[in-house]
Image 1: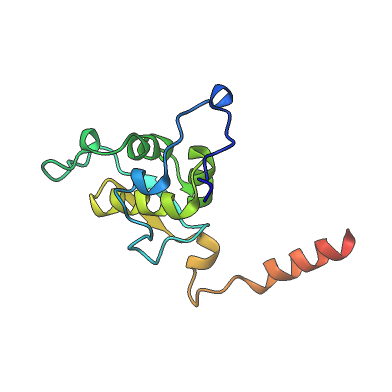
Image 2: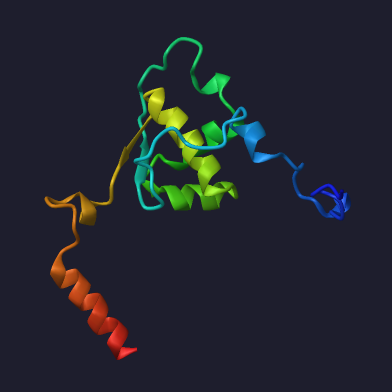
Length: 132
């Protein structure tokens, strides 16, 4: 059986090849179900971490996410910036939220009462598509 890394040319690799479950400590699925591609995440500055669980004890990807999210970013944007699968990024973001170092909120359009987008927005999108 051929290994999935066979055929890669090591001379062209910019970074060492690390399997995603190594980054997440063996976890393959996020524990949180509220993190979607468009969920906005933001770092919380000035919050003390639980003992032994600060940013120094986390993976480098955790620290990168914390720094990236000084301004609100969507989960998909964070995954793209890290060049990691979204599922891995959700696990890492979930760690930071659990430690009280980040917060997540749904996008404003869907956070309104009822949880559905405004009909005028949908009509404007429909009309824009028709004009194409």
